[in-house]
Length: 254
Ligand SMILES: [Zn+2]
Image 1 (tube, rainbow, N blue to C red):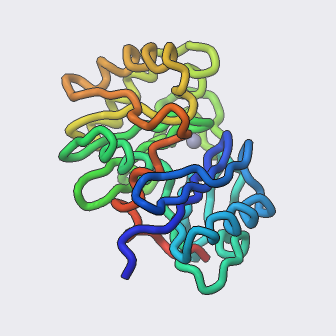
Image 2: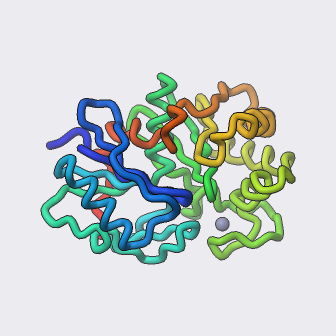
């Protein structure tokens, strides 16, 4: 049984990329600007399949019991990834992108223990990685941590209102609501109980913004070690570096 994929398709709200993992170091092979539709997913699948039979797909959102994907920030509802990729005979597996990124940041920073990754992109992904793998952080009701209610009245693309993600978007768009965002990060840390926290994601490639956000969340993480992303500057995310940790837990898409 394979322990690592040959390629990873990393999908985000601002773009998608195919990485070859041959030789151990991720190498960019193809990319698509903006969120991909099903036609673009098919092309990314063809590009990934050139590198081998084992392909990991990392996307925002969640997979339901039928293996269909739901990602509000990409406009996906019951998306059949297997149908879009159409790669019969290949070993295609899916993981949430924040989980892959958390595993990648843990590896790149050389951290032990439990790492909480806050992934700031078009939405807010929240995941924890430890020696056993990585997973999206959910609350007791099965709601992604980025969509936990804060009491704020603004609507969220997920259909609810006042999600943590709403506060993240507001701060990223206008620099407003820093205290509320810091409080939300404290709530997430209380739930995740991490040994370290990493801020990452495509919205933080600007160094000044990363520095500002480190200040915003410093109070919320208490005395925990707090890091900015260790992903190389030319890579959109650390996802390709976490594939060895999450491959075994990848789910077969429907
Ligand atoms: Zn929401």
